[in-house]
Length: 226
Image 1 (cartoon, helix red, strand yellow):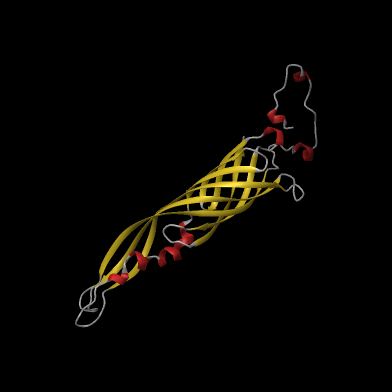
Image 2 (cartoon, rainbow, N blue to C red):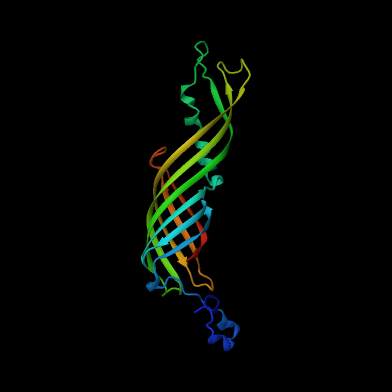
């Protein structure tokens, strides 16, 4: 038991707290005691994405989690760059009849203005104390919603090429998509405070805007358990 979590009775206040060595003083507060379910946890996760996270533990083996936050947009630069031609409708540019030359749009740069996500997950947990006390392994399925706002800058050259000057252009795209998530992770709770630490890896599959596109995501985090 944790001395910090126990109030002394009037009777016990007449006795001194027992003196223990430094090693024995590192007493671990018991959480996830089987007879004490349900539990709740709230905290944060860093990685892709950075999120606030809530987890509900109705029983020893089942749990439900909700994460909300911001994706690590820098990891998606090449993907967002590759979307430019389709978003700019390059294949619909006009062609000069006399020279047979086609107008061109040249990508310059892009900037992610917003990249938010919301995710729900249903998890099944296994006790892994044979590996390390306080360790749980889990896996599950979920669903993720993503909302991204991207600004593209480009140069536009009217055909025939070389006759006129290239003109600078800019457009903003709002992309909303969703898809299933498959995940696995570890959760560790052998601390002197009622907290748990976790590491998880996810595989997201886009089913709306870019069907079939897949991306590994993951991160580490902490939750306060109560």
